[in-house]
Length: 409
Image 1: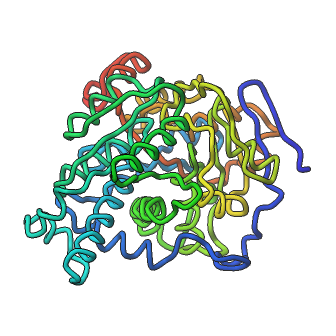
Image 2: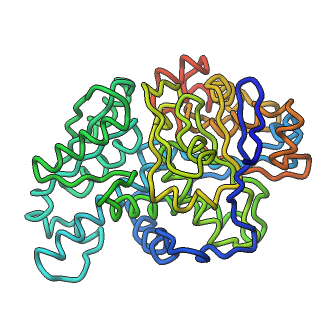
């Protein structure tokens, strides 16, 4: 077994199964995500009303303080109206599901979003109900997609989801129901209710007999990766740090970069909360491992105890390293982004969005961990700011200011 490098507040597991840089994405097995699937999602979502690429911000003062060559931050807090990259996944899967329902009903070719938004197929759309479990952001995306295209929506939140996040989902017209237990319990409950009522589950995690819709979700996430690829061109970063819950987002980014940059793809580092480290545990065991319990972490979007099997099909050999950090490092990351050193712009990031910077802060003074990750003054590190202030009350409590105040400075 490859060693685990540990320090107070952070653990690192270099992946002994990581594919060599020169290994093609398609080698060895049939990958669940494809170039065609990413291209279809891009062609659709890039035409939606209100679409624009989110900012890729360079933070030179932060890089200097961390002893790195450069740090880039993909800022998702202005993604559509949802303040999160999740807008790209759940809503796209809702669109695909409705699209297929129209094809099945009328025998026509797949309608565009414009055709669905025109009301032409409302007789089909209004009969559909979509549902899912969520930590907050995915449910908001599904609810937004349902509202945009005109179907019904029921969202289940577990006991640790803040009321502010539940209210934000309801604001898009969804019926929001709170259930006992953790995220994985709510996933099972949503599946049971869907079976009972004839609803359609739009989840970002796969389970036995359920793969196609989560794969649509993951292809939707690829739009964000496509924007990054276009911004960097032929000179990708040396490292990308990606936070993970069930792993769907991380796997989508990993596959996108692998397909686009091939042997030049960045070193891929997955980071999780210590209290919800199902990918870390699965990597150590070389098999899927479920983490039980309440999974209490401030990184609400990562409070997941079971890895999505489809995501694992990519990350098992696509990730170079798996890391886990204490919550406090994510909170430090939020504050560092909101209160930057001279020369850097202020960035609004929620707890989950700051996880990547949290890892950099955790290893900043740990020489062995930095060496294990290959971080030095020449490293060009990409962080994925997956969410903004998706819970404004928590954001203000952590940072001491509202997002509006932070950006007004």
